[in-house]
Image (tube, rainbow over all chains, first blue to last red):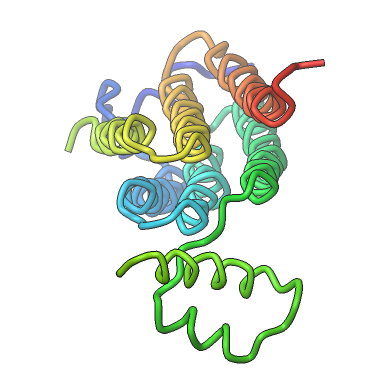
Length: 154
Length: 84
């Protein structure tokens, strides 16, 4: 019932180096595009995690990897697979990641905010926020933190 | 063109782990390790998709669940200084 050899051939197998075969089915040619786009999303997300200036801005590329990148790559693999059980397992893994990864990101940001970490703002933006001051606004609280830090300098 | 996507994913994990080493706060490190775990799940899925016995996908599923539980446990330990 389960054909084992056809999943060793096709363009995805050739791209990922697993025994390049002869015949590529149409579904493999359809599924190769989400895998490549998802790889691009994961790579740029990794660059964003490495290079963004702030914790709260680094959350965004990490969430992109967790939600969009894994959905594209695992969805592309699930389209390209000819075994329905493998596609079902890939859909299960993708849905589990799609639920748990934003939950853990939310818990992480909530813990960071409660511990007192505040987002990084440009000084001009902080001044603009401070002029129209509203109490208990988190952006205003962060701006006051930054301006107080600026006043410490000579 | 061989091993293209797997190479890009491994390089992405290396870049993310650079942030996990460098990160100024503890939350940067937790975020980076969480993203690296997601990349590891994707890698295990890609390797398991082309492997003969299909149990690598079960490994990826268990790894995704353990990644989530580990993140929540580390956050709880940092916030309350205990796991109770």
